[in-house]
Image: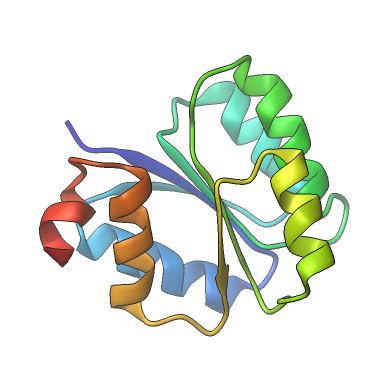
Length: 130
């Protein structure tokens, strides 16, 4: 069964790059342009992984991560932060909100799939990267 990833980024080009990389590796994908839209998608769909940007309008990625953790009610869904930010303070805020990992943009496809393979053992991405 294919795993489903929710990609959250206000930059359409970046979101499409993430989605292309994931679909090429065999994942189903859902897309959202901000945290508010992502919470709606999360409420209506089963997801196995969330990849979110930090700086977005309406609801930033750290707030979204906190809200997503509450909405998931303890389900162990990995949340990866994919952003241009690299400050330790932001990383600590993301961790405290419930983020599983952090990837700095720009990313290489193999790098993204490698991290996805680590947080979703046995996923198609893990087999693709191996």
